[in-house]
Length: 153
Picture 1 (spheres, one colour):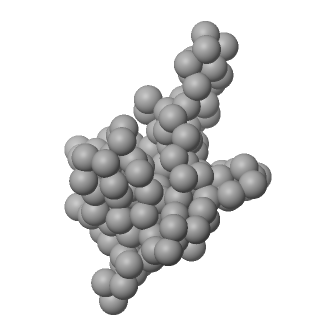
Picture 2 (picture 1 turned 120 degrees about the horizontal axis):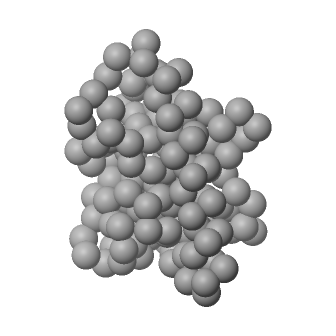
């Protein structure tokens, strides 16, 4: 990806996630909560949580403190997954494509894979880092869990 377009993509994604969050508030107001998913270590210890909404995923630590979000954005004619850190700048921290997770400098940081029930995360040496039971929006959930477990957030 040409990172000269990175600032424009950051703005578009930030706006998209803000709109999605507003839409999520409307869903919550009507009584439709997000689907909570526990992010687990390889030994089953809860490391964080993913809140799965219909069009994006929020990631929190085990106490519920927000760390970031992942959403789908059409860029250069292709749908791509972008990770946004929950800080005051709402900065883009990485992207995902074809079961691979990259940081903002296009460096490969790990891999993710999903089945209809479980998502698995591996580092660049193919060591299992963790897993989550992503039963909805599996690919985006798996990429978000990977970003959380691989330390992008």
